[in-house]
Length: 449
Ligand code: NDP
Ligand code: 2IT
Image (cartoon, rainbow, N blue to C red; front, side, top):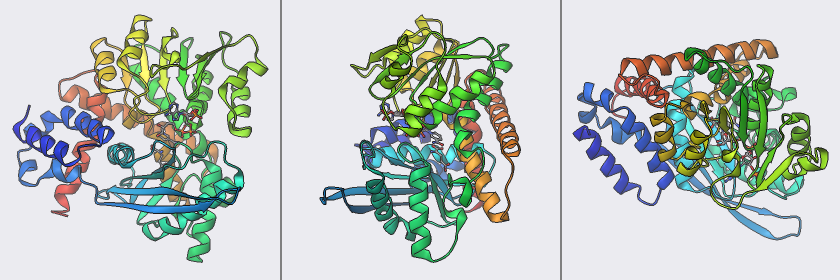
């Protein structure tokens, strides 16, 4: 390995011991950009690797709130403002009990490169809380969001840092967060958050954007390799925002989604998943995926009993992990390959553990890497920001056409860089190389900051 890269990585590993997800994300990027580091000896003098792996700022804060029983609960809030070289900090908020500093830092780190790939002027950030929204009433969610924003507001702004949704944060939460921000600031700063409701400054197609964008990327990747989506069988983990709209769009190209899941288990419907039923269960009732059987008793449900999700044992042409990090283990990757999987598209952030990624690449599975394949969400957030600045709205078709162009260009960048650096077909490396070059250029131009 390049000597400087090796030394920098060792130092970063020592400094961030105890943050496994963050180190996993850093290692993946660093190990795939080695040739770029070889070509640029000035990186060492400028401590570029050390600087890119150190967040510009981390804020952690107390989030106290009162539940419906009158008990005071204390959660922990985070905002990691990782890199502002190409634009204001930008990235989602995750509310999930597993949230800790390592997870927010890995997400913020990946966001730097993902946002660079979109071609739009947005830096990298992430935030969230260990708050668990499951089973909470609307009033509890509102009180939590208000308390969270009462601290967060002083760290964000349309030209400073623009949060959005992620796991556990959707339209309802963004609404409560925005309401509290507006109340505190006594100003209508629409561009401070994205993923807003359509009636108060949101962008058409933002809800659909990540899943639609994933499908566009998959379409381009298959096309470049002599395949298409029509007639393909698809399995999608998760049944949240990304999973639902990936299912919707990929079906429109003639593919058939046969399985979806949540953290408890997965459903298999050989006739093709009834997406309206899933939307009703997840978007309206906020229920469990198992309830699909109440509507379609012929479908099958398998409970998850180990870290290997049962969904990856189902035979499929295309697998779209759209739930969470490290949900595809090496065992799951082996099952998928054994069953003849053609392509894997990462809708979630870092859903494949490193061994699974390596296994897919060794076995010539077309792998669409998260930073590129799920960038449609944040790209459309940037389009929302630009509409807010213009005080103007695009139609759904206009936003979707822009999204399609952006995803097509991202695929092109991944392919060109994979070819240029001698690893054709390795879009993981292609994405990291394209994004890293852009971030490095900006950091060098802006001096030691
Ligand atoms: P949602 O909260 O809408 O849905 C999350 C889904 O993933 C649910 O079905 C949930 O199941 C499942 N899930 C979450 N955590 C776990 C876990 N620890 N184990 C198993 N299943 C889990 O989130 P999104 O759809 O927005 O996000 C999904 C993924 O996509 C995340 O990795 C996110 O970072 C990424 N992403 C999201 C973008 C967006 O615009 N929303 C943009 C780019 C990436 P359950 O209900 O049982 O918890
Ligand atoms: O991981 C992601 O890219 C997101 N959750 C979306 C971030 C955003 O700012 O829209």
